[in-house]
Every structure is written in C-alpha cells, then in structure tokens.
Image (cartoon, rainbow, N blue to C red; front, top):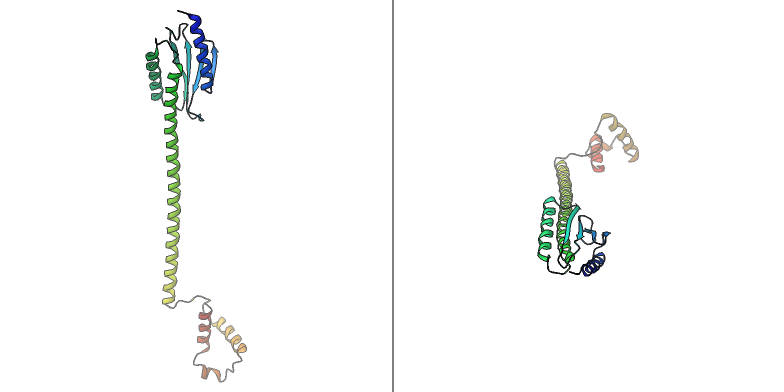
Length: 211
C-alpha cells in the first residue's frame, strides 16, 4: 500500500471540496469540518467533521461525525447520520475518494428541508392575506348595510311626514312672523283673508321647505 499516494489523494479531495462547499474549516491535512446548508440560505445547516484514515481511499475510510446543526428536526438529524453511515459503507474499499458523494446527498436532503420550510412560510403568508381580505370584505358589507338602513329610515321619515328643522314654539313663531310681514310687505289687516293659511301654517310650511 502506498500511503504517499493516499496522502496525495486526500489533499486533492480536500482542495476540491474547499471550492465546492462555501464553508469548510481545515483542521489538519487529514481533518476538516464542512458546514452543509442549502444554497443562499442559513435557515438550516449541519456541521460534519471528516477525518481521513491514513490508507484512505485505497483501503482506509473517511470517518464522518455530525458536530452540530440548526433548523433540522432531531429525527431528520438521525436520518442524516444513518444516510452518511450507509453511503460511506457502500463506498468503503472501492479505492476512490467518496466524501463529496456522501456530502452531496446530505446537501440535497438539507435543501429539501429548506424547501418545506419555505413552503410553510408561504402558506402562512397567504393565509394572513386571505384573513386580511376577509376582514376588509366584512367591513365593506357592514358599511353597506348601515347605509341601506340609514336610507330606509330616511324614506320612512319622509313617508310619515317627519320633517327636520327647529320645533315650532310660540316664541320663535312670533319672531318669524314679524320678520315675514316686514320682508313681504304684508298688510295684516287684509292679507289673512286672501292667503287661505294662518300665519303659523305659513311658518311651518316655510320650515318644511327649508328642510
């Protein structure tokens, strides 16, 4: 077994991984940490430590350890650990580097979780918009109903001869009648015989017309 060849393979794989994954911390020539998250998102991630055995990839293995995570449910973390162990076991002994293949599957799984979270957020936003629209519709209906009720009440008032304006009292009638006589040059000695209306009726008629 050529350990020097294995070291070269390890170095080349680490170099390639550093360009593929945005966040990679090199701990030693045979150990590094990958921060796996969906593209352009930090909503969820998982940290995986990888250690090369001296004979990797010829005969040795890459050892994967999940060091931390965020936004990933515990049951999914367990599934990811099982996925890593299964895939690493399948590649073990094949003589070719396989860290990228294993980590790519982890990345895809994290991406699907982020997609579900985004869909959930979208659903919540759409529900909030629907609630707001329903509230506005209810307000419009209430305002329309109130307007109809006002119009009906006004129609009822007209139908029953209910007029607006100041109530007729003896005092305001006398004041109005005096002004009315002056404005219209009425001769009080003869005009009441020809009008057909009493002064009070004329006053009330004028109030109704103004209303």
